[in-house]
Image (cartoon, rainbow, N blue to C red; front, side):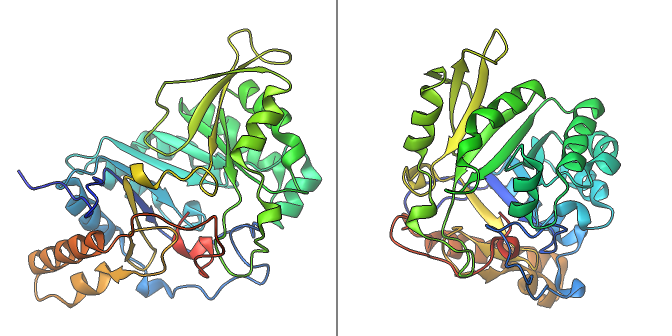
Length: 337
């Protein structure tokens, strides 16, 4: 049996994030510059067959969970076809997706039928004006309609993600938990990270995980929720009290800046053009696409890509330094959040 992929610190890779496009129909302030970015030409994107080949390499070496990201993955045509291909890869147990849900009403049934097992939906505010300001384009009601369409299509694992930015939406934590609970979803809060040089990063803009817990514990009783809601870094809590269902509501916090979880990192990222990024905070990439396309045969290309993956993992850093300053100048939409 092939040896699992692992880095030199002994961290095994079991989770692969694959960005299928750098294009998006929103311009979220923490993800993309207001003027947009220079997009990867379509011929330079990994094809669906190439993505399936890359996933197959990782699956043979211990990866069992794949997340499709963008940009906004649903702006890429025929995405349910890719989901079906990946769900059929031997060793892959879960294919999940992160989306802004703007197009989800159109595709929810097809995605569910294709084998998508879970959804993370960006949802930064329950106030329509704030929502539009943070997304620059987004229509909150259409996103809510997408969330409900996903539930009606049969998705049972829906998480809502809010990037919390001081002076923008930190006063909405309680309302967001209540909204998610009412929609049968789990709310998750993400510390504002120093990703992209034009995103207005500053330590003063980061509402820390501790501050979020303090805000919520002033309203509700919080107890740690030990259950696993995926293989990601969120730490989950159960809130009980006023305005919540009798059983309470679960929410998660991802403290990427102030509560570093690098010691337990289990993931790598593939960019839309086939770059392997071993760490979100490190701009160093190796191109799997070129290794596969320039090889004389498909088999030779897969072997070349596998060698590059092992080399990239060997060079993976022990930890990021988000608590110091801006680390990567690449916009999140180009990386694949």
